[in-house]
Length: 470
Image (cartoon, rainbow, N blue to C red):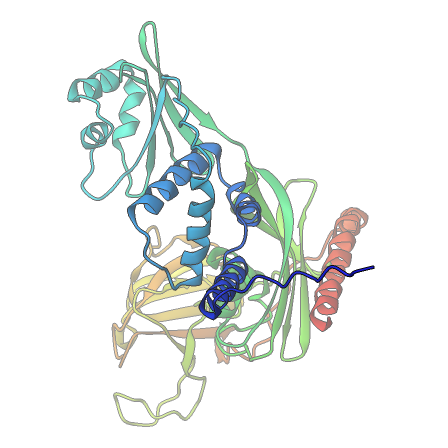
C-alpha cells in the first residue's frame, strides 16, 4: 500500500503576503472607526422626534444639502452630532414638505417707539385706506389708536389679504376686538373677572425692609400695607433690625391661570427685636374692615407711630440741643425725620386742621387738633397736599404735605411735634391710646375667621422650616 504524498501549499511572494495583511488591518480599523448607519439612525431619531414634522423635514433637507456641499472634517463634538444626523438622512430619500392649505393668516406686531396705527397696518401689508375704514366703523374703534410701547396687536387676514379681525389686550384682564361682518367692523370688549385665592410669603430682614420684602416676593404696595398694619406698634424708621422676620397671608388675583394682582393682607406676623406682633383682617357685619390682634384687640390706635414711611431719624426730642443754624442751645421739642424732598407726610390721627400755612422758622406748617387733649405739628414742608387747608378735617394716614426745607432747615426733613394737654412730649416714647376692640357680639364670628388663618400661618412656617433642613 502506497501513501500518496501530501500537496504542498501554494507559494506566494512575500510582498503579496504583506500587502494582504495590511489590507485586512485597514478593514478592521475602518469597522472600528465608522459605526454602521443603523446605529447612527437610532440616535438621530431620538433627537428629531422632539421637533414638528415640518421642521424635521426642513432640517433633513438642509442636512442633505450640507452633506453634498462639503466633505471637510469637523472637530467640535456638537458639530459631529450634527454631521451624523446629516449622514443618516442622506441615506434615505427626503420626503417633500407638505403644502399648507391657503386660509386666514395670523400676524402679530409689537408697538415700538414712534409707531402709529397706520405704520402698524403697513407692517402687515394693509393699505392706509383700511385704517380709515376701521376707525370709521365704530366710535369705540378709536381705542386702537391709544397705543403703548410694547403693546401687541394681532391681525387676522383673509386669503385675499383683507383685514377680518383686529385684537389687542389692554391689560391682563381686559381686551378689545374688531371683527368684520356684513355691515362692517363690530367692536367688542371683554373684561375678565379675576378669581381670588390666598397666598403665603415669608421674609427675613437682612438689609432694608423694602429690599428684603421685594427679595421675598412681596410687592411694593403690599410692603406699604404691611408697614401700615404694624405701624402703630413698630417704628419702621428706627426699630427695624437685621434678623427681623415676617409672615404674610394675602389675596392674589388670578385670571387665565396667571397672577394679575394682589388684594388685601388677610393675616400677618412680624417679629421685631424678638417680639412678635400678629394682625388679622376682619370685616364686621356692617361691612367695615380693620386689623386686630389674634385675641381681638384692635391694631389701630388713635395715632400712627411715624408720619413718614421708612424715613431716617436725624434729630431726636431734646431739651438741650444745639440748634444747627442759630448755633445756640435751644430745646428741640420734636423729632426730625430725614427723607428725600417730596416724600409724603401723613396725618398721625383724625382731627381738625388749625393751621396750614407759614409759621416762622417752621416754614410751611400743618397743625392738627385731635380731640381735646392731643395736638401734632408738621414743619418745614415743601408744600401742602390738595384739599388740606386751615379749618378743614383730616383722617388718620391721609397725606397732608411733602418733605421740604422751608424755614430754618439745613436739608429736606420733617419736624414733628406731639403735645398732650399743651405740653410737648417725646412722640417716640409716648404711649398711644388704643382704638376699640372687637365688639362682644361679633367675637365668636371673629374667632371663626381668625383661628384658621393663624393655624395656616403656623403650618406654612413649619413646612418651610422643615424643607430648609432637608
